[in-house]
Length: 253
Image (cartoon, rainbow, N blue to C red; front, side, top):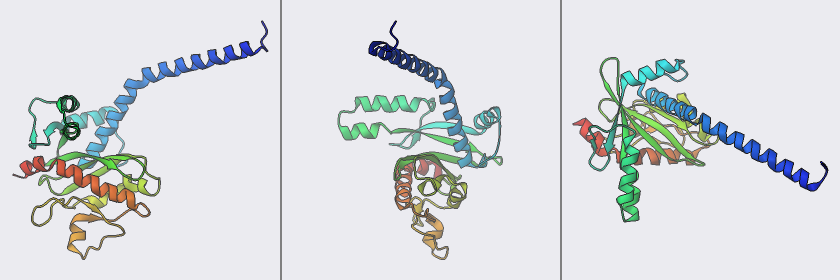
């Protein structure tokens, strides 16, 4: 066999490529369940961090985290159209309900609304029996979609915690949205104004002035050099709070 011929070299290269591709595909397939489990555990950790059940950097075993979540967190599916929690529906049912609704919609606008009609809220119980409502939040920053959780106290109006755990923003700039020190500045902010109208939490360009009531009540310091990321966070937090507004109003009653 002429190992220097073009045919041999081409055949060898194709064989190596096919073999390696098959091995990578098999490895990815075999690891998919573990990757999905790890992603779900990370999601649960962020829910608990937002709710104040887990501190940033706190080390717990996987078993301890799962037990804490199961003991203290209850997930409910909320119909954002009427604000009601659906009895007998688990968190995994939300995607199916949205898919069915989108498939049944004829108008493109109705289809888009149906895709996010049903959403999951995590209800956390504190040591003293108090309730915390943890809402999923997400939207566009500068370079990526930012995902996080916003926790409201028992009054469903005061921020108890926030996390931004998945994004592709610039490290050291917009990426600082995940910094626990910055997230801590959200605690105590109110999403409602004095007339009980929804205003959300506003990420201000620069630093807030505690002497200004509106700044102290509704705003947090901006991230240096990340104006677009901050504006995006302000916008999508308000949008998601608006989507949950009827549900939160029913909780306040």
